[in-house]
Figure (cartoon, rainbow, N blue to C red):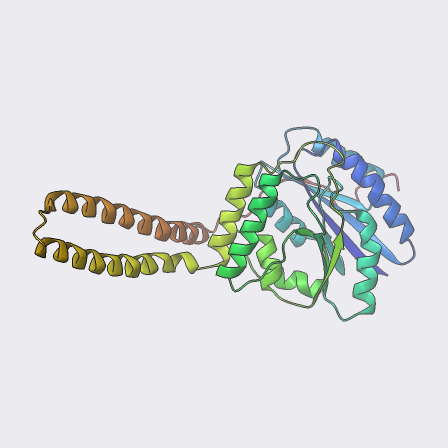
Length: 316
């Protein structure tokens, strides 16, 4: 039978993890005789009892494996670790808070087995329960990103997806340090079927994605998958050049009409304006050079502190 690997990045999910296992266990029992499973839980340096919950589940069920980081490396690092260690013929990525319904896994698996799709991905039909400001900013992000980048992303997409091994191999071939998985999933291509579902609230705990974290994550997307900001200095330079020519004409006409001009104020203003513009341009270039700097350092994307071993004793 096919082996399905379920990758679950976790950060402070001690309350959600037992509930997630119960729901996922129902699905695994439902698909018994159709496919085998492994649950690969990745502890992203949690400060609560998440790791203890993982140890308990691994002891209880041999299908559960876990990896624990030495500190918090971020969801992208946890996701990459799970993808690297997955053994399945099919690989799923989902969150532990049950906002990604495990009940969709059988349908996703049937789709990949009976069609020529390589991946089944999910998106929310609506954003019910989400703060209006966050929903507005999310729509703005997808609109701007799709206009600036050659990579296209659908709005309200989730990381929750089931993919074939060849899609996974393509994703793992992209080994950059600064990762934006939604962009990577889109960049590698392959035929993807989109599965829509109603938005689901967290089953327990609080979201780890503050507005500040989401803005930082959005910036990661722009710096990783579009070079359009590099053109901003050129566009601004052209516009300012046209503006300066028009202003010169206006000043010339004004002077010809006998109006006195305080040239020193104009000079001071121009120097301040263009000095600020240069700093903006240097900031844009600096953002990209910082990405290059991190790639050249070749730091590991994550560091494992502890993981379950093959053949480790368990109750089933």
